[in-house]
Length: 464
Image (tube, rainbow, N blue to C red):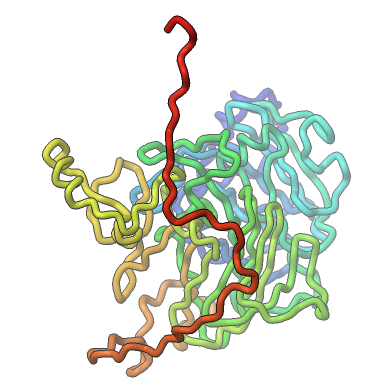
């Protein structure tokens, strides 16, 4: 399931840590594939029902005298964000985001953090209760972890829930480069507000500004990101969420972008059952099909997958379901380019018009794009182009999906008569009201219809 790479000898040479201390470290486990890995069933420690990290994996641990030990390595990584498009990011253990950490309420946890970045770092355990000196804020609660050094964090996982981890050192740069990860603390025993589920998915909402044809994020961007991703993947590179008909499903989403995301699920109603503050009280839950996940927040939703099919799941901000967006592209809808195109193609043979009939044209064109660039809208479905990108995936509900089977079952086979179809018959002109009411307050002092504009040039100075 995981690629293991033993680089302790290199770490000893890089870090001024004694060989005795380094020998006590758990072996760092790396993963470079962008696939959704199977859940990591616990082989020791307290039992729990594991989560599935969308396009990610769970970090293995070792038990050392009753302490659950992990080893995180902060390092530069290459992340395939979609087929044919890779980014130079920073992350943990070979990937961005880093691996999910799973523990059980009451576990004593020890995390070794080795810094292989070109600058200092730290890790903040977002949303958790712990001694102040373990909170991971550089300069405030601890010294920075310098390049080549290894620090140790140790605390008790005091309450169940879903949390995140990320640096609190040069935070703007390091998070813009992809340094983040998920943390799940499972309940130790039956909990009145945490029900067992059949499928439990987790992923982080993150965003990047990577210009077409390049591979490294622009770290100074504050708002105008052009790649909106889940776990540093963009559609069609985001795996589907594959479940069995009738499964109780939980999805945990953490937002470490710089804006909010209204997450919308088709075909089902869900309840928000938890935040990074803990389980939601029963009286505060109600049916929803969209929930807003604000910056720095986590939302946990639950539902019964009782409708078969391929159901879209996406952020409802339309520009978050596109890739490689431009912020200075003019609207050309309805503009006749024919004469201009004829003139330009004499000079530039490959010139083509974009946006004259709307942006759906982009999915039909086979226009060349720079190397290592994700198309704006793509993804081929069973009926044609899906015309989506960015924060979009599919919930696949199947009657014959076996328990514990997370493999993609392929496209849904619709029963006869259940697919929308084109009407091959003339349609009558629909009736329209011609006497719509006037404005409640008629406008006053409107300008005359015929306005003559006179332009007066600035006068020159005397003698000129």
